[in-house]
Amino acid sequence: MKAIYKKETVKDPESENNTYFNFTLKRDSEFCCEKFKNFCKKFTAWSYDQGKFSIVDQITYEGHSTQSIDFCPFCGEKIEYEDENGSQKIRKKKVKTF
Ligand SMILES: [Zn+2]
Image (tube, rainbow, N blue to C red):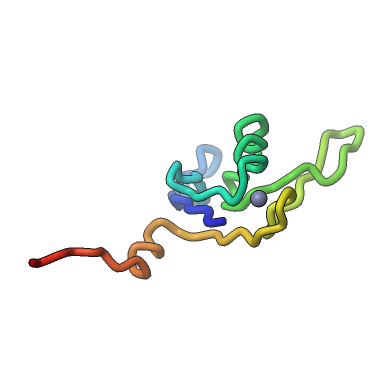
């Protein structure tokens, strides 16, 4: 599947000179299977600070730790992470001139 994200630079509210990246999953991402699509609807599987899908790895007394994933946990298809700006260069616009 293809996960298309938008990368934004956000100013750190706690420190004036610091910025961090915020990744937003685009709606035109192509999901590999319905199971994973539904999973993402139910749970917040997208990690905004990593720009990757992440699933709960371990549940501890303090909370839980997450693990970023490169493969779909349901069908096993590889997840390709793509910057929306980067993808524009690769995609050739189909323009019919005649
Ligand atoms: Zn899948």
